[in-house]
Length: 164
Image 1 (cartoon, one colour):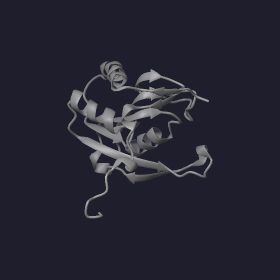
Image 2 (tube, rainbow, N blue to C red):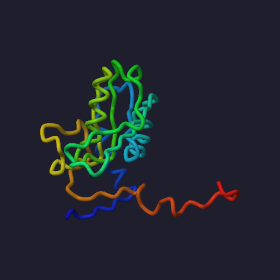
Image 3 (cartoon, rainbow, N blue to C red):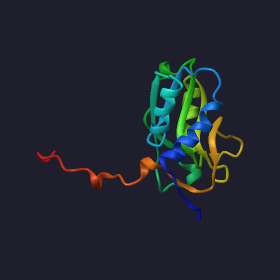
């Protein structure tokens, strides 16, 4: 079993400090994969001054053998928003690689030029041995827990005073 690695915000800052200098040139768009890519995507949009920010939400249904599961795109930009654009796709982690590669395929099908970035890359878990992210801050085999995943949840949300 993988060791659990609980990150602090300082750890995320250090990862971003390693990731950001890898980028060359400008991107026409930033495509953030929800939910893991939201925080690093927000940071990158500011640092790289990318104002054309899009989101993709992908779900893989359980109960199907992992390699055979087909993605369901809950939200994805229309083709005309991606066509001809150099698109930086960001997620927090490349574990199996299914999500980010599904997004990459959709961007390519729309005529975009995707480049993939993650904070953590897990080559030992990847279902895509001939592929890897274009940009990554660290390689790990650990179960990574990001600071935005800690101590929050629907159980901590107060009920609306009017019952809504």
